[in-house]
Length: 185
Image (cartoon, rainbow, N blue to C red; front, side, top):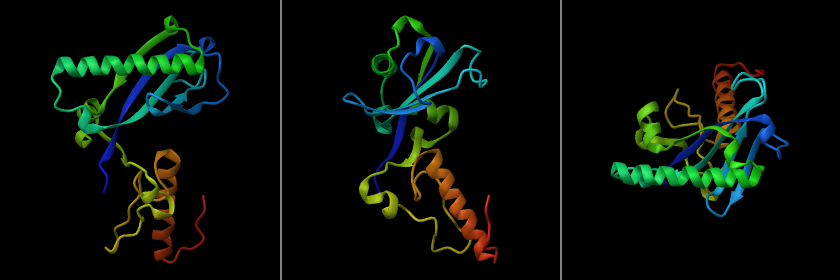
């Protein structure tokens, strides 16, 4: 199995009027620096930020081992570098002027380990690759009676939609094993 992924997550707030180029709440930008940059923007007035402001969260996958065993100075320098690079990428992609950020902070695998108790700050299960994705993904069924699996590493894959679908599939399989066939939400 490949090493599980970690994430570097950029949390920010900005006035809605300062994001000029948005047509959706979710984006995946292809970037030379990060390969994929996943971005979520809240709706104005949805309660995540004061009226007239939105939250903007961007994340990238990273190798967790790249963040551990660093001395404090090196860690902080690396974190600051990622903050700058992600800020620049978002400013470019969404036409944001640098002075318009109201708040910015960054979480790394080290923070995820500390605050969520995830070993080595792992997020998102096993990194998805063609040989372990989709039809080749890990099954929810196990050889152990009564043990089912769902989550980012289980078919159909990562993200809220993939995890929700794997949980729904497990629920249906458990109910079917008990004779309840026509379950629907």
